[in-house]
Image 1 (cartoon, rainbow, N blue to C red):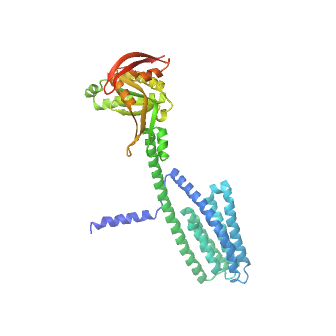
Image 2 (cartoon, rainbow, N blue to C red):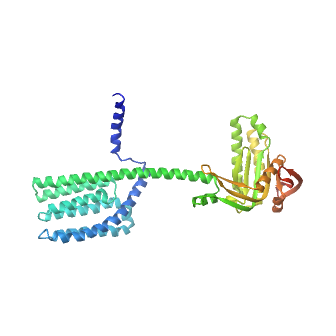
Image 3 (cartoon, rainbow, N blue to C red):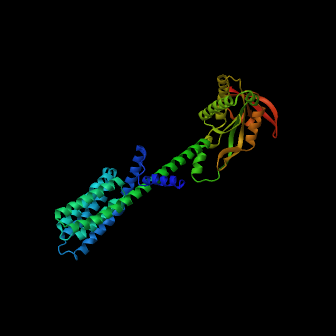
Length: 422
């Protein structure tokens, strides 16, 4: 028994929550009301034209029931004209903006017309109670509105109907007959409106959370992928693979990093790398080249691929010179004498995206291998180029030959040193 008690109290505590509408913060609540306003406009466009047709047809049958159907015909034409006016007024921006509140006035006019017809028609109670009931259902579900506004409409129809009964001096049986139907109808209408709004609020909340999560994922993808590649993926392209003929690749890493890391605390090592690579990211953005990735203490960037498709060797050379200065400044701030060496090569590469759970944009090919080997063979603080890159750089940069060197897996390669910009 003791084990059942908590579950029962839990159910009792949850029960009132099921009968409460979840409220959002002011900004979200305003967005939700805007969504309801749009749904209200859509429902008005659908329901009111149907209502016009029905109210134009109903007087035909009424003429066979009532000997003097003038009031009935007038009532139905009034409702039909009111519905036509309600649809036509959707052209007005002010009406569309305030349709949830103005809708109460339009609805009240229609309900009042039914009550007046009830008063001025002999034995009209049996005919117009149906009209009042249907009018109540319009507020409770046919026309999309909020629960609080539907409640106002139901209170008004209950008050007006009983006022009509009182003015007509109906007997107690009539009061009981009308109010029993009316209260039952109001209950159904408000219950329907309540659960529709409760469901819509839950749906709206889930959609916002889903949209927020999707935006977060999109931001991550935009950060790790070139925008051009991101747009292609968003456009539905599943396999990204390109052959780029004129790409300049830059590799650089910290000289003696393994020794530095062994005698420095992990916290300081991460602070140093984060500071340095953040600056390299800024410099890459400044020159418009594409950051490819970091591997340990190595930084890889390129021109001629991704968002840097229109950039060339000049941009990479400018990046390397600025990066070399930034390395020295970073070392001074952290109290470490660090240098980087650079390897730059130009040629064709394959670029594309690999991975599903963690997609990565990368480049492959002999040009990438050559840049990596040049970086490994480069003296500390030097920017070593292959012959093709050296040929592409014009008089804005000073380049000097540094002889042929044997590179592992490649063979003898003519190399050049980028000294400075002119």
